[in-house]
Amino acid sequence: MMGKTPTKILLIEDNPADAGLVREMLADSFKEGYSDSAFAITNAVRLSTALKLLDKEPFDAILLDLYLPDSAGLETFGGVHMHSPDIPVVVLTGNKDETAGVKAVQEGAQDYLVKGSVDERLLAHSLTYAIERNRSLLALRARSGQRPLSGNAKAKGIEAFSGMVGLSDGFKSIASIISTVARTPRTSVMIVGETGVGKELIANAIHALSSRSKCPFIKLNCSAIPSTLLESEMFGYNKGAFTDARGDKMGLFELAHTGAIFLDEIGDMDLRIQPKLLQVLENRAFRRVGGTKEIPVDVRVIVATNRDLEAMVRGKTFREDLYHRLKVIVVNVPPLRDRQEDIIPLAGHFMDEACRSSGVHPKRLSKEARDAFLRYRWPGNIRELKNLIERLVILTDSDEIQPRHLPLEMTSEGVFSSSGAGAFMPLKTSLTIEEMNGDYIRHVLNKVNGNKTKASEILGISRITLRERLKKTQQK
Image (cartoon, rainbow, N blue to C red):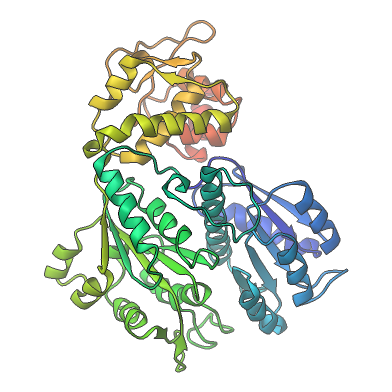
């Protein structure tokens, strides 16, 4: 999951109708975590205006129309990309301009979309990948203390890994494997571990330390896309391959050429698609859906899973030949409960990070709170720890976090109080809807200055559910 700060998209589009349509499509269909109040679109109608905006403020991604009043075609893309090479660009083209879109991808664009044929899902999907890649790079630079110089900046050393902190033997073993495999840029890597242990962070580190770090790093969650669409997402398609294929489309493997691709939840990949992935690994080439031409590709494949692939092979739900081709290097990531030495260092790291991003005074865990952290089993692993720290930073008034501030699952010392300014209200990591009474919701909203998006994240519910709960409490 990405950061909690609003996602900023620079839309460079001079047609008001097209700009309005983009806003509507994103508001309706953007990937979870990017609701209409969690991202912000800034519209520029001229290239010159866009470049001035890029000088003034940072953006997570650029959605670019190639034809503007003061620039046209590849000149437009070149002007943006040369000015801000560290921000991924998704190009918008007309039906007659697809050649320019393909050339823009070859010149460094993340993707191109054709006006009139792009739907809400495809627009959200394309921007999601652009933003994930950009934020991964920014996080790696931040951890290494680098200033954002360009999209090609390379973080060196284990200390540069975003969110990867630890003292345990398990952590040191993982760090050693990462450093070794990073030096072999064609070797496939399989990362195995429970949900929330940080598999994506390991993939980021492998790519960042490799000789491919200056090239694209494309990510795909195999469980997030229907199996009927996964093949075309991975390998692209040719015009006429299916009803809605109005033109040729590059897949993620082509976009990742010379770089790497990260396939998360590989165990959820449909059996019918697995032979094509095996072909890429063995022959370094593939065909688009509906195509006959072999397309060569140079890409490192990194996969991750929380499933027992050996058992799936025995059950005939995962191909044995693909399994052995993927497991050239295996990184087994132990759960947080087996890495007790890492719990407090990670908590401190996330605490510092959350305090800085929230603009609050530094906080610390008391000895008793640290003891509670060490006793807890952390079923959600590092992700659960990070989310809890963020909630504690926002909802705790004092500079020192005591056992009474911790979730009820971790300690029985919390006492509910809804009276008086600054009164403490104990957290729960998994509230039921019935337990979210008006007092609790208003308490959380007050702590986040009325930000409903942040409040819904803390409560673990959607904005729609939050709105419904607020309406019900007002009616009582």
